[in-house]
Image (tube, rainbow, N blue to C red; front, side):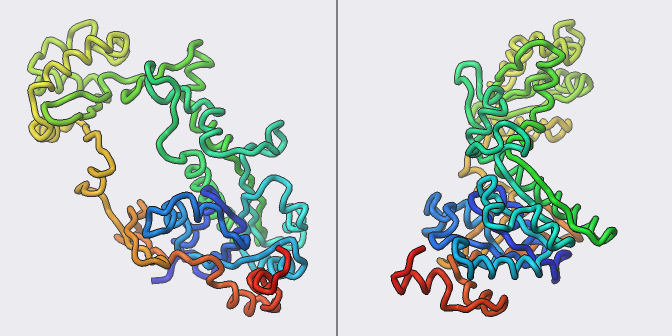
Length: 390
């Protein structure tokens, strides 16, 4: 089944996570994605070797692409890329700021030469800010944008989110912006210049604690595995495992008191009658919940909470996620065999996207060079085997 972006050509001068995340989603939607790699390859190829010898991030974010090795310091390979861009619909890149300008394929130049081209530049910090030229990686931005300060507990101190959340969210934002730009081009005939940064993406995510600090006057707490402004909303211990429950309003609190805690009077207790009161008296409210939960198993509580429609979740580890009854997986082909991924979340007309193959480094170099009219003997692999410089 053809994807909605079939016929769209994407040229991706990318590495690491953010840009590959965006282009992999375009590939999932049916676009043809040519991934340009240095002779040594995208450095994400060597992040780890968990997936049958391949890197987990690379397998996840590079499915469905073609890999072409180029050395952009050589005029021939730069001409090859320019020929690709002349035919492309989208160019996405996350090299260091200024790198593409120095190569003569910067966004301003490309937009003048190819008015229909959608150009997407991803950086650590936004253009025009003092930090634009700084190196920026996910964990550094988590700290710099304040995310680490509100993550963890008061005893643990600031900590990181357990995945590369800045890279991932920026890649998702880039994907959405590119699709919007392609839709706008259908109306206007013109492409767009898109600019995103890891810092801006994560800082925008921080609006709730930002507003709490700006207008509330104090730093938000680090509540660990609990919600900072809703109670009870956090983790409690059962006989055999941990459970996390969420009470979203006073009606649910009343239901919890009557049907689970077995003490209807708690619902009208002035210390707990409203959410603001429960947050102010969180230790006492949590203690009453914990007292009730400590005598029950997870399965017993889950059955009861399901019956009265109160939200809960198991505090799962990765072993639990592997066998979770609601997880949906998909297979992806790699150079070392079939790998199982958690499937993309979007379901359209009852179907999730089919995942393309993860390419070997330079797997499509020869065919792409033939297609775009560049002499095969000039490719980096040939020069390397002949003892040439890179």
